[in-house]
Length: 490
Ligand SMILES: [Zn+2]
Image (cartoon, rainbow, N blue to C red):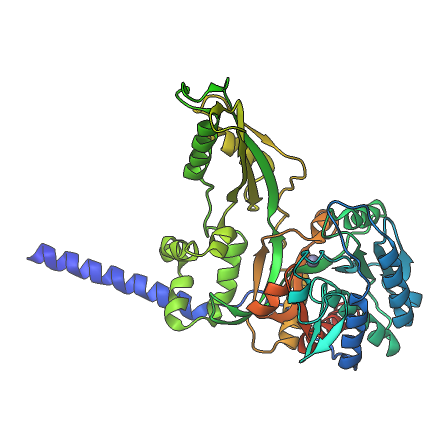
């Protein structure tokens, strides 16, 4: 009895201690980026309706990037002439360079050369409209229509909205007589949607000049309405983007008549290889990395019960990983994903193929590299004879992970909060690729964020039908860039 009594007491003491730790940690979590947040400067007056009309006009230049066609500079030349005419102060005070194609690299030198420049990015090109989908649009995709509080058309969000918002901001500041202490660089790529060669050339040019920007800010994430984790509107600042690797899995066999098949045909070898790759999977979770940082940043905004769990990942991490992994997006945040996309092999129903293949697309988490991922895939299929795995060209490692503790992150987060009051801000991981990847190793930190509030319907239009940007977002974005520059460059 006495022994049971002591054991019970010890257990109760342990529960009390653990419970105490859980509650203390729950009550003391602090938002990320809150320390060192600067006081945000007031925005200059901006004519939002005029900005919306200018975005509508920019959409009419059909600066389309096509995978399978030669680059046509004419629409870009038209867009440039329009921008020069519309933003005369910006185009006269900034030096304007075109290092390659029709990319624009613009620089306004600051008065204090000891301060590292800030670099703001957008791209001028847009994706084509799917053939046959044109009449599903509320307005023709290149008409540049404005209706019901939205600018409609291809590129409204991706990414001419940002392009126009940045130029509206610089023009309004210059009209007020603003002279920056810190150099401001604008980098507007012309082929983000195909190769990003423009951004690459601009990054190399800056590097060759020894320019190391304080930070680069590009598209990637935004203010999401509503974010599943918090159940409310949440601003996500991309601190990294996933890498890209496509491999070809090939199975070979001597072929022959299908009436006398070998133990494993070429097709079966590929099938077995895909199953083996799937079984092995990629490790991942919330031990560290952007997903972990995102949860930590959002924890203070969660209801008590959820906060208790998130503030104590040392205890609840496996449970949370299980929950996060239930959604596709959650899985993609935590690990490298593997998606077989094209299967091929065989030409006749009674002939054994001598070769069968699968194209498999991977999106690399920052913890994996192209080399380590390839090695993992090859190890997974090592036991299957007659199977090889080769990478296809155009692979790309994940970007480095930018810090959430520096003054650049604090500036972007605080400016986001200024245009979206009360909205929690957290770091995030961009699942696609942006032009900003070329600035890793050039800029100190790279962030990917547009200060626009996007609903699911807004997001569906990006690369889809009925792309649109609300006038409320144009106001938010223009104000954001003006405040970011006014605060960060003076
Ligand atoms: Zn884009």
